[in-house]
Image 1 (tube, rainbow over the protein chains, first blue to last red):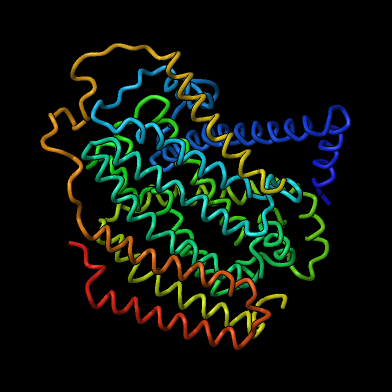
Image 2 (cartoon, rainbow over the protein chains, first blue to last red):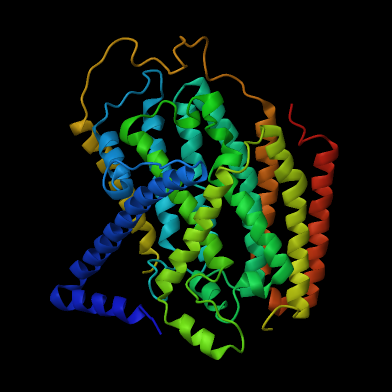
Length: 360
Length: 116
C-alpha cells in the first residue's frame, strides 16, 4: 500500500527534466549524501537524549530538564559546546593515525546505514549482498578504535583499544553466525528480499525455537559489538579513564561518541530488519480484518517502532547487568555462544530442510 | 542507487569528519602551556614507553577469530542456496561444522581461552 519506489523515481525524473543528465546524477548523489548526514546527526542527538532520559527513568531521576521543554535541546547544546571546546590531545601521539581514526568509525557507520530499508523503496543502496556488506562495514569501526587507542600513546587508551579489539572481533563471530539462521530461511542476502520474505510471518515467529535462540545470541553479541554496558570494558570509566578515546577532546571525541550511538542504532536496525520483519506490519494468518487495520500504519513507523523497542532493550541492559571481567567475556563468547551458535545453525538448517517452519 | 553509493557515502563521511575538524579548528579557543599536551594519566606523569610488547592472549584470540571468520564466510553461500542443495548440502555442512567443532575443542583443551 505504501510504496515509495514511485516517489523516488518521480524525484529522479524531475531532476533529470530540469537539468542535464550529468548534473542531475551528481545533484541526486549530493541530495542522498546530505539526507543521510542529516539522519546521522539527528540520530546521534536523539539517542544521546534518550539514553540520558531512560537512565534517569530507571534511577528515579528527572534527567536533563533545563534546556527547552523536557530538556529536548540538551544534546544540541552539548554538541555546540563540543564544537567550541579547545582541542587538547597529547604531543606524544602519532598525529597522522590519531587524526585518521575518527574517519574510520564514522565512514563505517555511515556505510552501514546506507543499506538499511526504511520502507519499500526508501533505501539508498539495495545491494544483492546487503546483509554481508552491512556486517563488513560495521566491523570497520573496530579499526578506528584500535588505531585511535594505539596512536594516542596513552596507557589507558592502549588498554582500552586492546580490550576493544579482542572483544569486538570475538563477538563479531556470534553476530555473523546468528544472522546465518535468517539467511537460511530467507535464501537471500538482499535486505529488501529478506524483508519481503517476512510478509506473512516475521522470522522470529516463522523460525520459532532456533530463530528465538538466534535472536537472543544476536542481542547479546550486538550489545558487546557496540561496547555497551555489560561489555563496556573498552571504556570502563572507573578503571581506564575513558578507555580508547581518553586523549580525544572536542569534536574528535564527539565523533567517537556519535558513532557509538549510531552503531547502537545499526545493531537495533539489523535486529528489527532480519528478526522482527523490518517495515512489515504485524500479520496473523487468517485474521483478515486485523491484518487490514495493521496495513494502514505506515511502514516507516513500523520500522522505527521496532528499532526503538530494540534500543530501549539495549538501554535497559545497561542499568540491569554489572560489567563483566575480560576473562568472563572471552569465556562467554568462545565456550558458550560460539558452540551454541554452530549447533543452532544446524538445527535451523534441519528445520528448513524438513519444512517445519510456519507458513511453509 | 548502484555501486556508486559506496563512493557517495565515503565522501559524505569524509565531509562530516573533515568539515567538523575544520570548523572546530576555526571556532575553538587556543591557549597552551607545557603540561597541557602531556598524556592524560589522572594527573600522574607517565612512566616509561607505552608502545611495548603486549599480552599474547590478544594475539591468540585474533588468530582464532580469523579461522572462524573465514568459516562464516564459507557458510554464507551455503546458507543462501540451502533450499536448493537440500539433504546433500546439509550432510556436507554437518561434516564441515563437526571438523570445526573438533578444532574449537582442541583449542579449548590446549587452554587458548584461559585468560589470566
